[in-house]
Image 1 (tube, rainbow, N blue to C red):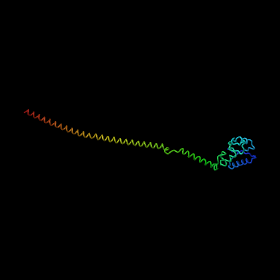
Image 2: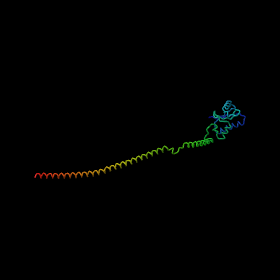
Image 3: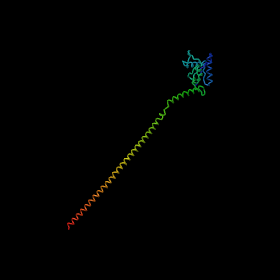
Image 4: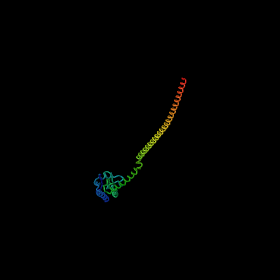
Length: 223
């Protein structure tokens, strides 16, 4: 980018000469490369300057006076705006150039960036802060779900164990109940056997007595 400074080398105005010298001296002190363009000896420079100064920046008579400053084709300003920028340490901004490191303008720009970035960072931080519960919501839900599933599984196992114990107790009770009647049945069977045996013995005795009587009768008849 080339800084263009339109000057009038043969101006009869002391004020204009002083302003031109002030601008040139300050640019040289800042080591800013610039190109002086004389409008007094070059009509093309004069016409170009007058045509490219914005209408709202021209004086009432419509003829801008030097010095006029441009960055390539972009209008920067006249002496008054240059002076104000110099007083505010914003000459590089006025010229459309990046301030060199270590300059006052660069330091001020860094401070502005820090403040701006800090404010934005805080705003972004406030916007992006997520409560711990929300951040861990999914994890907590998964953990809680897993815990509930484990508890349900343990409850099911306990219920199964309890049911198994009840079934075992019922089986044992049924077994004991079945064994008790069996003993009674055995006793009853023994009693019945004894009765049958007694009846059989009694019947045998009666038959023997009858046989003896029959034998006696036969003997008596034979005599």
